[in-house]
Length: 245
View 1 (cartoon, rainbow, N blue to C red):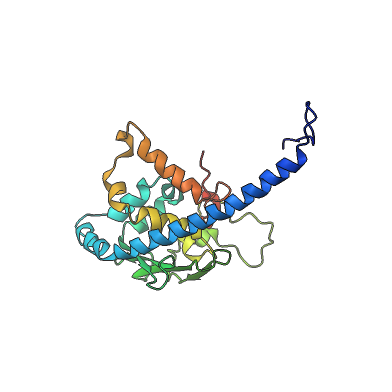
View 2 (cartoon, rainbow, N blue to C red):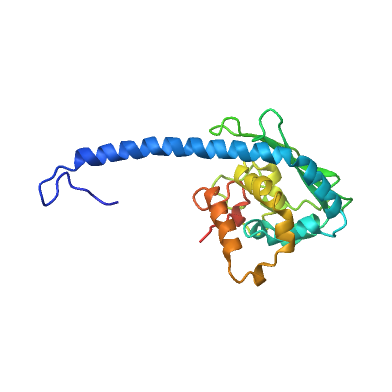
């Protein structure tokens, strides 16, 4: 922290002007926050309008094997959350759908639709978010019905009898599927609903290794940084929290 003296070499009093500058900056930040909220609402409104086109897009995606697995693995942030076993389970993923509220499109439900698979009996995995009050985000989780001995999140589950200081959650076996039971996970939801999903064709087609200019990846990382608090994805499995540099 830089200490600023109340006066400088010329004897000019600085404490008052600096205090005033801080107050003005606070007022500016309030307006910036309003802008961010309005941009998010506008983005959500037009995402809702795109719904029929996304449905049409899915009809094309149905012809492409492992489309969504490829997109998830190509995403510069989400890929680091996917273990090898996760990828095998996600290979059965047929579609991702984002169902937005018509009354308030910033609120949405994320649905992952799966084909018959050896991991769980659900045909879809669901997680719901209500961002009406950004200081009190409401999340509704839907359970995964794992088949016997196939629970990919088992290694991350902390037995009730263990002490809070136990580090059993900090292991290399944390699964992407832990997100579906996380109490929050809104930052990762934002990546899925507002980046991965609308830009799915870009992630599938684009080969980042051939991206010589790097502009595309840079833009993605900049956007990801904006929604990641303290350098981490909130709600990501503990051992997979992503720090961007």
